[in-house]
Image (tube, rainbow, N blue to C red):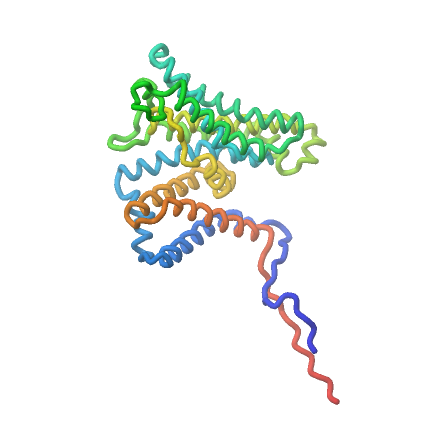
Length: 370
């Protein structure tokens, strides 16, 4: 009787001698293509014409100048959050709470605009942006302190602080900051005109926040590529033992990584409040801080890749809204595409260090003659 074969498939995973440079480049595009193919199958399973649904989801939302403006508008907070997270993750510091830091940036920056907009005059926008950055950094300082002082997990602390930040915002707009002329709606007074970010294109809602996001992307590239602090963060993330031997402070890397990511997320929050929203309300983000985690990894933790991944994720948000209106699909369709994108990205990441190898089986031995 032949022995039991534990691997009935003719293929097996084999570790590469060195990571594949080609797969590092192509893993994200391959994941995006696999996501699109899966989306077509899902549309067909839901009884929709796949090609027509593809047009509604990916083409129609950006077929006009207004649609392009919406694409850039939604890409702005994703890009701002993801650039900071990319630097943070390269340092092996896992900030999962960008959504809460975005919310605190919206509160602190929005508060400056609400209560000091008239007094600050032309200086109100720079002060608001700075306040948003400080608010995000202050919220990120909590997991930074607990990680460096008590060795707590920044993953759990930053995530739990998201809900505290959202409850704080809800308390403010339902209570002391509620607009008395707002007919009992839970929202603050509108920001004064001098506190609103200027539009970039006539007939669209995209504003100078997109330019700020591009400038931050260039700054993150410069910081990570040319500065000693950026080098120390990379070494600390790639080889913690070597970094400790070289005298690189782990505590300093943790603080710097969380301050950068928290500040960039806070900047995203105030850009939303001073941009398309124009006031504080119970929800200032549909989950940009969480989606930015996917953006950072789809962009391979590289500033240019993050810019492109932000546009892709923005297109998924727009496509989900278009599918709701024209195809009567649920709002969760955007989350479906985001989840499949992350799933395929993780699968593609496997082939950077491994490859499929065909197993050649030995011919079965002839039975012995009696």
